[in-house]
Image 1 (cartoon, rainbow, N blue to C red):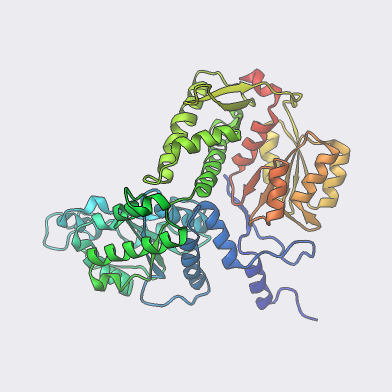
Image 2: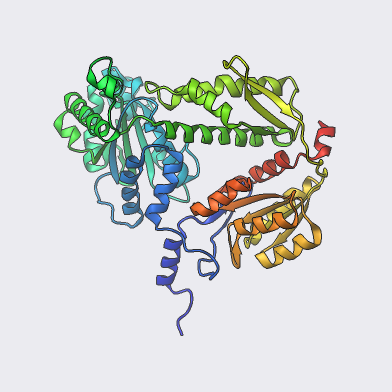
Length: 507
């Protein structure tokens, strides 16, 4: 009889569960799920899983994510080539299409935060002598010992994490840098080594190097929005436009950079203009991010923001621009939604735990933001919360956290125990891990609503939910917390949605 924990079986388990269940907080709890549970659904292929995660964060650019992910998998498998970076990518396309966002989203997936990127803004190195700031002054030059290089091994290692030791290096708007910048990068892109002014070296063998550029952007915009001619009347098919934009980008790159520099780039990726569907998905994501920001920053003063479809269409109409991409939409949300909302909060016109509705004004030129009277009965000031997860460290940690706020926490490690507790105590809220030993959290939450219709159900997951489970969460308005998350995210979600009467009194 084989032992259950043989090395080859452990390796298979890690492949099946590429994202362990982690909660990051003041104390870090890190506990992988038991991948051998019979009731748990097998996860998708790791490459497809990582691609789907990136596609959710970088909307409308499927080609970019599909090209980058295999290089990450090659590094994780230990098959990346030696003596050069893991991958070198040149990201081209119109502004606001997600080039820089791709690198930040990749850092969030690999390291848990989008800040884990070593970024070099090439607009700061337009003069030849400014390039010396990257590597420091050589011996014999004034300021040799005082000049701290921007690219050092310490800074490269600082953007890695315990989850992944692959560093991300971004040279933003590379076409703005002086020609000596590209000459300096020749050795980095070819051999993965950069020699500094003090003769020390920086090793880029465990790095992904990204170069972004707006080369050919004006020609691309003329192709997207022709001013005259038959093409401007007929319009351009999406497939034809893609090939034309790629040709424009390649011609611009070959004109600007030397052949030896272009030859060291693994992939040149041309980003496409965002479609109406992509902009709509970006809007939904930004509104969800705004709600999470409210929950995190305002804590017990948080509230629920309700943006109906007509208000979303107003924001899309005002913020859709083929010339400026998603950045114009971001400015529109900030001007018409975030700023007026901040004014209401600053003047104490929004009560803690209330619902804030958004609708279009009669003149159709702005949004009206107002507090909506709640039709549900107020929840108790000290709610009862059920936490269902087989991570005992997480159970104990949240139990201490909620006890400090006077909340009652019920804990269960299986769906069977959770059903019994719901029948006995009728909790106000339930935090359900998606992958349980004897079921899944989404279906369990639907069952709980039948017993306690007013219960708040929050689903926790470390993987991408299947489409049918995502649909159930949207249908029943289940918030989904993606792991890793902060413990404060859990508390703020409950505070904002339960709207306890005691919070309003204390405020």
